[in-house]
Length: 505
Image (tube, rainbow, N blue to C red; front, side):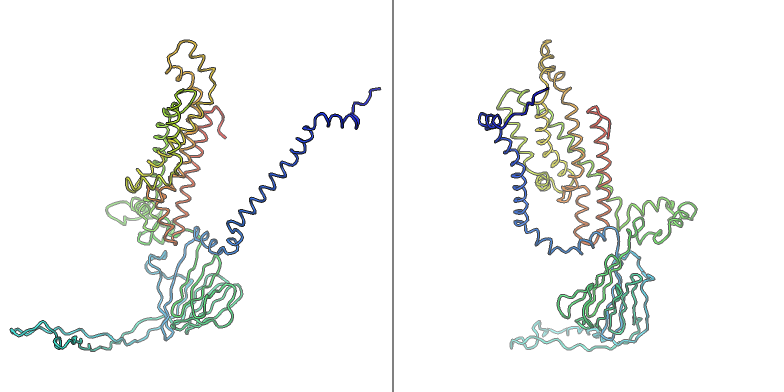
């Protein structure tokens, strides 16, 4: 029978008396995760309080964020009705309307009539010629008495004319949303509710009844904003009704309103290109269509693609020059390659100086030095990445296996040959991998620094965002940037995997 080897209580107490640190370390290890968790919780609570995150979230304008996102994938048509005191209206669309120069959408129903108006216009002022005598004076009558000459009252002429005005308008957003304007009254229907407002060309708009949840008015008499969700919205003032009807898609993406192909279906465009008579006698319909696409005034495809190519070139050239500059300097910064402490410290502090200032700040500096353009962007990428790559390269050199270098030394090789055959084979794949990663990363960074004038698509993206209305153009450029980043990410991963001896993922 095998005796039990389990220690008795006396033996456990004896072990604890002889080795108390064993028990203390076990309890300390148990308390450490709890202590770390408590510190993290306290830090999160402090952050919530310090940045007033709760207050920010409670007062955030979430509907505006949703509207911006909707604007990325849609466009608006904006008919505006100007209301006269007699209740008649004039209709106008926004400049550069996506519907063309003479818009007539089927969702705007108008009732019109011709009216005769009398307009007071000042008569043409009669020009009196000065009398040709020597007593002509440049002084106005009464000037000696300190009196200014009063202009003679100009007679006015009454002119009558006829014009066509709108007496009733019905705007249909969808089956459940519509607005009717007639006889100084605006009636809005949405989500099964009907809301009426009185306008009539006055300075104030008066709601008839309580405001529904989709209507807002800051102060009595001011404009009323009607929000219809993704369908659109409207603003009602005393003398104007502004409609914002939203449609999914990107309007006039291929051909703008000035193109002869505008408004035609894809089949009609293909028929014109393949079989139709020449629209422009100087070139074929295919060349004309391609020209209209490139020089689309609303989307500016050629300019956007050119700026995107500038961004790619900026990232490639800046990273290439930074890699070439960091390669020789990293040998001076590596302590196991260059034994001189002074040389190590000087080069390392130079790397710190370059990478301690963000690329965005360097872009501002070089923009002031060289002026706006790709040269400033290339210089910012080159200057920042030289310091970062130099530091990474030097650390890779310090982590090499010295046995390979010692083996080359043992055969009597020269110092340059030792670095060539004992060091470079170990670090070149790492150098190339890091350079490829920075090239991929700088494709994104070049977009950011372009916003401060360093050239590329970033500047054009910033210009589109500043208008606060061309969000579909912003979405178009962001999509192009994402496509470029995905492509270069795949290329970079494949190259790095091949260099490191692994299959691409």
